[in-house]
Structure formats: structure tokens, C-alpha cells
Image (tube, rainbow, N blue to C red; front, top):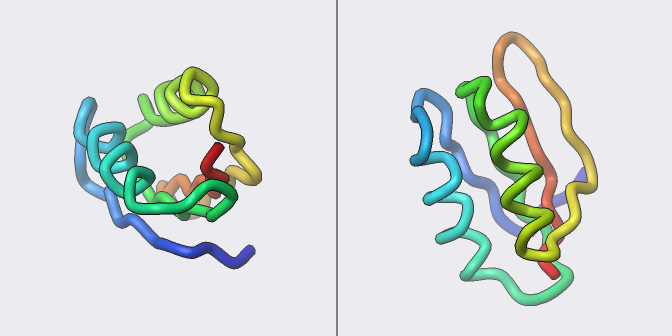
Length: 75
């Protein structure tokens, strides 16, 4: 999947993946897509909850070798 911006939040623990995701999302226009890569297992619940609260859409989520990748479309 193509994204407008990539965020590497690997190695960060809560709440930093959410903080960095919010800052990156603030730079995008409505409809653009942010790719976020994290290793914190808490992000499996935190990022979808944050996206839902902001009206954003999780287009895809995958996990490979301990790295969780989210594609989030800005509301």
C-alpha cells in the first residue's frame, strides 16, 4: 500500500508511538495516508483507539518479525 508519509516509531514505548503518530498526522491533509511502524505491543490497541477517536481510518494492519505496521487515512 502506498502512503504519503512514513513514521518509524520502532523501539519506542507508550505513549511515544501515539505522540509521534499524532504529530505526523497533523502534517497531512484530509484523505492522505500515514504509514506507522511500531514494536510496542500496546500499540495494537492504542493506535486503533486513537484513530477511531479522531475519526481516522485504519486501512491496513500487519505484523512481521515483531514490527507492527499501520496504514491510517486522515479524516
